[in-house]
Image 1 (cartoon, protein in one colour):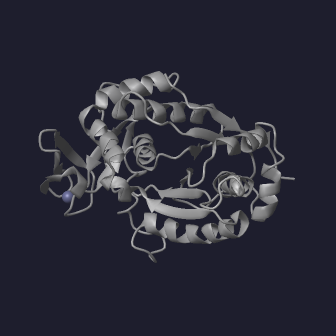
Image 2 (tube, helix red, strand yellow):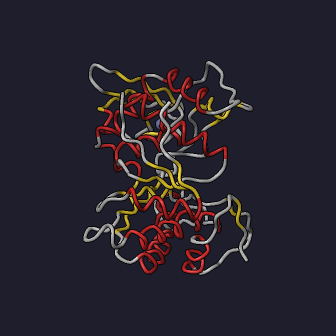
Length: 309
Ligand SMILES: [Zn+2]
């Protein structure tokens, strides 16, 4: 298996700058569908800020592109079999169709996207000339790489299950249900139902178990639920970042290895795999450290675990 290089902690921040080119995209991560923890701020804000500051002279005049993705086609409402997190049955709604908890925006995805704007502003102040983008995962549906991963999920769930078994140590996965993506109902926005993909016409047919509607359309013309590792791989396929920020620890080693396996599976021989950059594990309940102070700590923290002073 091809595994992209992993850069870690302060030394990783210093080293990874050497691989950057002007205009490179950094996939900073998914916008959380919850308030940011201090560990989120370290990974999502302080690390990209430090990288942008270090890369400033190297990447002129274009600067870096720092990209955040709103996982609007993911959900926390799919049903997992007991002890089998990858045996999912589509249910409920995706984040783009779940109601906003405070009813001020169109959906839960758009609510947290709107609140993330304040963090983007904080990062702009700290990161200088970097170009910061917040994209919705669904916006990438026009990209061929994204479509290739989606088609793979719709057509070859068994191959995806095999990739999971290889990448995730000790994972239990049954022969069924094996569903990693499915359409969203145009009538009621539920994803509970059956999706059939027709490779001859590149169309997906969906039958909704919630309201009984049927729909059929080109795969580019529908909304979907996509399992989150598959969605991450699809976004990487579209964005082709040179660096992808990731969470620390062995659990995420496996999830990142799975992302790479899915890219190999969907894109064939030699996809461009991003280098990975991980911060230390930050065990802290406390919050509110000013971003520039957190950047200073990020630049000092050499160990795999860190604590706020
Ligand atoms: Zn429906």
